[in-house]
Image 1 (cartoon, one colour):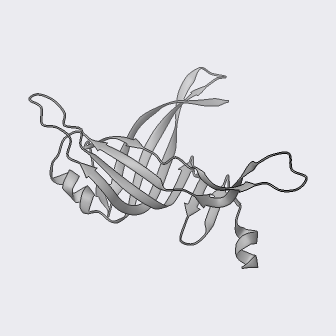
Image 2 (cartoon, one colour):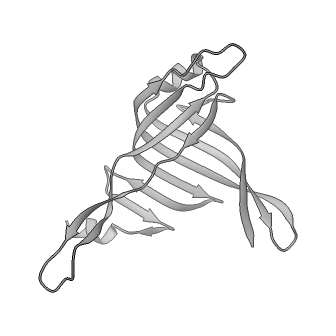
Length: 169
């Protein structure tokens, strides 16, 4: 068994540009289903029913070291942004480290940006928030999550959870 322990390193890419050493941290989106309250005869109270494949706003927040040309290139970047990383894993049988690739592919638009601070001898930590319409996560070459809001695609562990819905409408 291999246990993921730490993200060894990662890079941010957009429009074939590698933002090397400038993106310090990325907060990935929180997937919160849209829900509808169900109540009626024979039901002992309200139930919040999750609507399969329908989610609220999805955002990423990318924190940079300081403002620079790459930061402004990223702000004007539209569409595709890819985060490629190497997850360090501990093999429980051998007690050794191994590595597995993780790729987070996103599509969206800049929603807001924060220029951070100016600090002598310090980092400014400016941030960019992007609204996502597409998110795909691949771990070790396996697609584990894919959401495409515009094309009504919602897959978890390779299972297309909206295929039947799309075929019926």
